[in-house]
Image 1 (tube, rainbow, N blue to C red):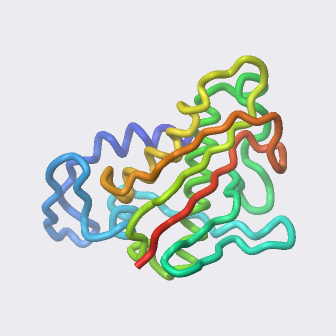
Image 2 (tube, rainbow, N blue to C red; image 1 turned 180 degrees about the vertical axis):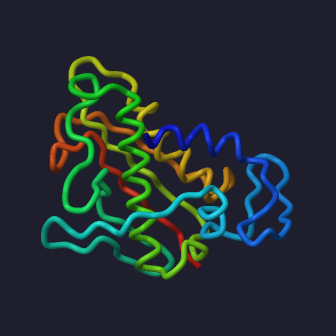
Length: 185
């Protein structure tokens, strides 16, 4: 399960050795090793293959120093890994897992476009659309699946502004879709 990774990452936060057994000084909340690519390795996170478009569009567009990603879904290959609405077929925890997977897909697209996640200087905006059923009010908890992953990789100082929406339906029947805008240098 993806959520187990949250607990594992939190318990590994203070590690000072990288995969090459070289000491790194990791001290204090919010500080990060040299870059996002190294942080992924330190956390034991392997990015999936970037998703391919499901229609006539591109996954990323860069204009100036901003990189806009298309709506990121919780997919593996050409299919949604999670299907349903939070409060209906899925609970909040499954929504968090879907949000986490959609963020991983977004990072994979960004790395493919930029060549390295180290070129990201800030996460400008994270928009999270959550398909809900009934009187669900936990959309922010679902969005935290993506927010916490991004913070673990880029640090608290690069947290984005965030908007969370409850919607009736999303592409492929997915419970979550992310809009991500990165500043790049």
